[in-house]
Amino acid sequence: MISYVKGRLSAVEDDRIIVEAGPVGLAVHVPLSLFDELPKIGEEIMVYTYFQVREDAMTLYGFLHKQDRDMFRQLLGVSGIGPKGALGILSAMKPDALRLAILAGDAKAISKAPGVGSKTAQRLILDLKDKVSLEASLYALGGNEEAGGTSGSAAGLDDARKEAAEALMALGYTQSEAAGAVRKVDVKENMTAEEVLKASLRYLTIL
Image (cartoon, rainbow, N blue to C red):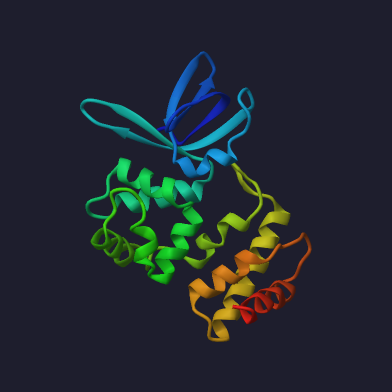
């Protein structure tokens, strides 16, 4: 099992990147939605991977964050969705947007992905709604992730976001509304959960 690949980004192709790990160039298939997050050619990159082995091929799929790889794995657990289909969904929607669509039951947004009809989108929501957490849907707002976890300051910001979202739900907002509001807040270092909550409420009042 190849958990992650770390090395120099040597090429970006149609739906994959080439990572130079020592004397080997590894082809890693990635969702198109992460292309704008890639470093420049020649710079170092770490990609969290899913390794698929079949009789006729061995394929690496890669993601910049562990939570996004987890989302990919969850998609594979949905009947009728294979690696190519899962990659297509995550190419059409960033993983955090997909999580929010699942929480909101937005089959229309999910069915815009290539090869995904309304029935597949509804089945995806049904299968994954209880597996997608509020914490995961807020992940994209977090700090930089390293192989060993998040920094103390990033973890503190994540706690403030989560507490603010939980407070919004206690006020009667849905999980998807709370996550969406908190996502709109430009959270600065040392902001408290109360400050994030107030900023989120200001956003909700103008909807």
